[in-house]
Length: 95
Image 1 (spheres, one colour):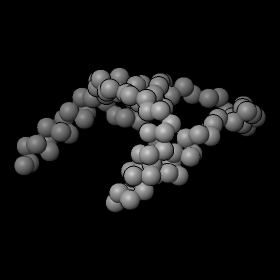
Image 2 (image 1 turned 180 degrees about the vertical axis):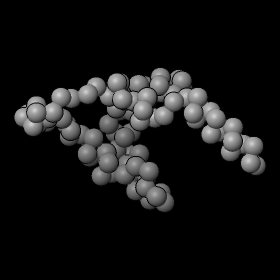
Image 3 (image 1 turned 30 degrees about the vertical axis):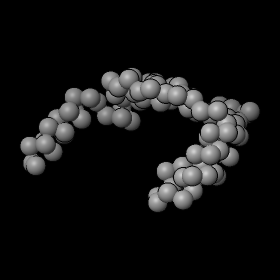
Image 4 (image 1 turned 180 degrees about the horizontal axis):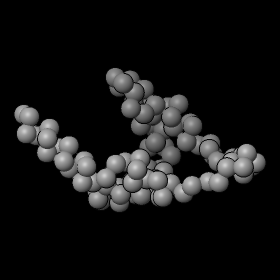
């Protein structure tokens, strides 16, 4: 998760402070957030983080699909900084 956050931040030109939490604090965060409207995080989210989400079989290869590194498509997923800046400038001009 840390790598994903850092890679995304680099693409967006941000410098986030990523602080890893010990398990007991993550569990406590989930318990507290269970009661927060909209549930930004929950006990169930915490439990799911304890399980690997990477399979042991390369299913893409079996299907004849060549994997694409996230770093290669991240700019397209997030949009380009110049495009975002232009949109923000337009929104600011409307207010």
